[in-house]
Image (cartoon, rainbow, N blue to C red):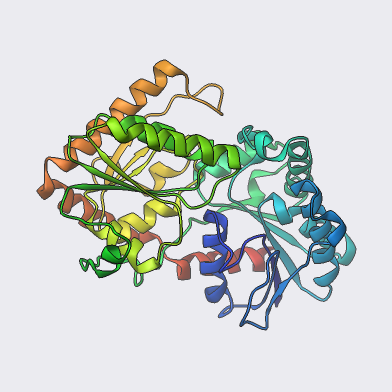
Amino acid sequence: MRVDLLTREYPPHVYGGAGVHVGALAPHLRNLVDLRVHCFDPVDGHPSVLAHDLPTALEAANPSLQALAVNASMSHAVAGASLVHSHTWYTNLAGRLAQQLYDIPHVITAHSLEPLRPWKSQQLGGGYEISCFMEREALSRADGVIAVSHAMARDIIEVYPDVEPARVTVVHNGVDAGEYAPDLGTDALEKQGIGVERPTVACVARISPQKGLLHLLRAARYFIPGTQLVVVAQSADTAAHRAQFAEAVSAMEDSPVDVHWVEGPFPRRALIQLLSHARAFLCPSLYEPLGIVNLEAMACGTPVVATATGGIPEAVVDGETGYLVPLETAPADRVGLDESSVLAKELAVRVNALLTDPVSAERIGRAGRRRVLAHFSWDRAARQVAEVYRSVV
C-alpha cells in the first residue's frame, strides 16, 4: 500500500508539535507501508520526501493563500497513491482534493482545531477564515480521522458535528525514550552558558498565546528565590508575539528568579541534559491537544507541572507523574487578570513543592519515565495509524 503523507513541517524544518510528530512517526511508518512524504520546505537526503515550492508570485501573500497554492501542487503530485494522510490545516485541503481527484481514501491527523484557536486571526488576518474552511471541508469528509487524545476526539465531534464518531480513532503521540532518557552530563549545557548548580525549572514552547508563556513568567515571580527558569522558546507565531514575550522577560530582571531565555539554536543533547537536570518541567498551555514536550520531559525523568487542559491529563497523572492545575478559561483565547493571578500562584505552589522536596521529585520523575515506556512510543503509534489505513482502504 502506497501512502502519501502531507505536512507543512518536516525535519529539519520543524517549529511545532505537528512537525515533531510527523518527523518521528514517518520512519516507523516506512516499516509498515510504502510511504512518501510531501512537505513545504526543501529536505535533503531522502528520496521519498518531496518538497513543494511556493510560486514566486505568492511570496508576499497571506500564508493561507500560500498554503492553498502548495495544496494544489501536492494534490497533483500524489497521483498513484493508495491513500493520502494529511496533517494540520496547512495540507488538509490537498488531501481532500486528492480524495476527489483520484477516488482514494483521505485520513487526517488532527493536532488542533482552528475554531478553538481564535488568536490565530492575529497571525493570519482574513486568512483565518480560509484556514478554518480548509480544515472544515477536509475533516467533514475524511474517511478516517486520527485524534492525538481522547480530549481532541471530543473536540472534533463537538466542533464538527458532520464527523461521525465511528470515523474517529485516538492515537496518542509518542516519544523516543531511547533518545529522550536521563543524561546527567553537563557539557552540552555548559556550551550554551547554562549551569545547573541552582534548582532549575524548564519550559519548552512556541511563543504563542496558546502556550501560556506570559502566565509562566507570572508564575515564576512566586518561585522560591534563587530558582533558575530556563525557557526554550525559539519560534513565534508573529513578530508581535516575540516582542511581547521579550518585553516580559526583560521585566523579570527585578524578580528573585533568574530567567534564561533560549531563543536561538539549542542542540538536542543540551535539551535532554536540561530536562534531566530540571527539578520540574512547567507547561502552562491554555490549549493543548496532548503536548509532546510533556512526554519528552517525562522520558527524561522530570516531573511535569501543567495545566489540566485538553489531552494533558492523558499524559500527566496528577500526583503520580506530576501535578495538574485546573484551567478555567472563557473565552478560549485568554485568561482574565484575576484568573491569571490565581493560575500563576497555583502553578507556582506545585513547582515549589518539587523544588523543596527533591526526593519526591525524583520519585515522581521515575514514575513519569515508566509511564512513557509503557504507553507512549512512536512504534506503537505507527502500528495504530497503519490499522486506520487498513480500515479505510
